[in-house]
Amino acid sequence: MTCLDSARLGALLESLEAGLLERQTAVRLALLAALAGEHVLLIGPPGTAKSELARRLHRAFDGARYFERLLTRFSTPEELFGPLSLKALEDDRYERLTDGFLPTAGIAFLDEVFKANSAILNALLTLLNEREFDNGSGRERTPLVSVVGASNEVPDDEALQAFFDRFLLRVPVQPVTDAAFSALLQLQPATAAAAQPLTATERAAVAGAAAQVRLGPEAEAACHALRAWLRAQELPLSDRRWRQWIGLLRVAAATEGRAEVDALDLWTAPYVASTGPQDVPRLAAWFEQELIGAVPQDAPWLTRAVEAFERQLEIEQSAPDDPDAANAAGKLALARSISGSEQGEQLLRMASGTLEEKLRRRYSPVHVEARVAQVDEVLAQALEQHALAAQQEQALARRLQGRLWLPPDLAQRLLGAHAHTCEVLAGLIARLQHAREEFSRLPVDVQLDATAPARVVLEGAAA
Image (cartoon, rainbow, N blue to C red):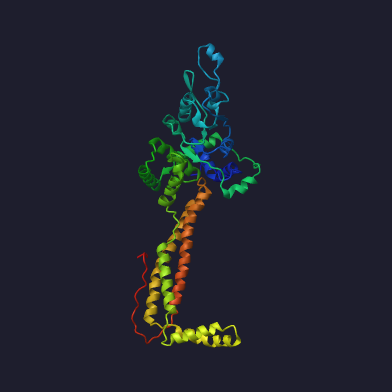
């Protein structure tokens, strides 16, 4: 089910992102929200490209008019909705001339959106939710596609909560990190040609395709799990926001050519269910760790097992066997202490091989077999876990193919968790294999008592 060429959307996203460092998530969410007919709130300090993102979003929609205002407590309704019509007043009608103002805009950017007074906010509530504007005695339909709001902070005034709730997506925007600072200093003005904007017909096709997308059982189960988690965390999410969110996820699936919403689509949860930027990290952690299971594992049980085997191997390799071991060791130490002279070097060459071999303890074949067998037990578990981690990484990589909206840095982090686990397990497996080989090379005396040794104690190891 393809309602729009994914390559076309990809080119559009690339055009929107050009020069906006570390803004992939904000750009994707803003465009997705607009396609779904929802509004997005950008939360962050001044100078973080919030207005630039909104202006670029406007260019992504063919024929959509743009409106932008910085709101203050002194802003008047005329600044947003247009001046009163003097001609209408002559006829005792209270109407506004809205042409060129917010009621005729397709994409709008409202900066410091929560600083507006109650007269403006009340009118905005209807406009954002119903796409209608009360002008005089009647209501007018507006061509509004999406409003991008911006604020330095989340409102704590109870009177503003209804307006805050109109923004389905709340996206934190911060200054670039140290990793992108050099690129910021060298950044040139964007010169890339804008991608072909989306037409009203194409937007209608997206809406039609989205209406056919199913909510898959995996996604439904994930929503139930999230709802329980949100309840435990005392994070409210209204029924209306749940329904709006599912509508947004259907648009995401439709534009990626999928017939149903799945659990991976819930990567948007931090930007829908959060009450502010402080909630985003824990919601992201819930999605990555609890829902997707992308948790980097260091396999502490296996590390302890490997270390226990290596300690036991060192003990058994260095254990003395010959009754004259102490005397032999003294001779070897003397040879090494005078090895700087020609005589000492000759003595060391002659003595070291025989003396060191004489110092080594012999073990029965049963002893060696028992040690190797125990290592093999743990090795089998480690290999099984490594295979599982590799399968999970490959399965996730397949699922991530064609995901247009999921930010690349998030995809890399999800895959990186499994890759880290694979790398850690591979390193420990290599150490286990080396220990196994060394145990198998212990000096053997077939005449020794064929009694199996006590097993190496592996504290906390897997069963």
